[in-house]
Length: 147
Image (spheres, rainbow, N blue to C red):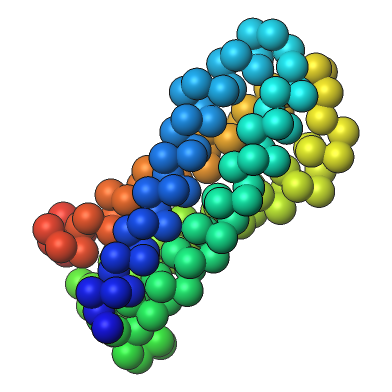
């Protein structure tokens, strides 16, 4: 079961992180240069069909993997427990991602225009960094970097 959970988690992370890297490095500079919110929304509408399910798979498998590593959920933020460092880091990154996503969805995207593309960029770039950090923290579970 562990192998299947880990495989699904890594595949979903590949989709989520890869999509955000493409968005930040390829799509966003062009959108900002051409002041084209339409290009951004076109990418988002296509990517969202695989990105959001990937995020959901990551959250579910991540929670199951965390539970597998530390079945006592009350210990997930106990920093005297080395395995909790990674779990707490991932949950913190998830919370930050959620906050940026909610703000973008309800505040920025409804009024997206040439005038506030930079505001959207200030949402996209941190979420991309968070997604990369998710991978770094995930790798640390196998390498011991965080504990």
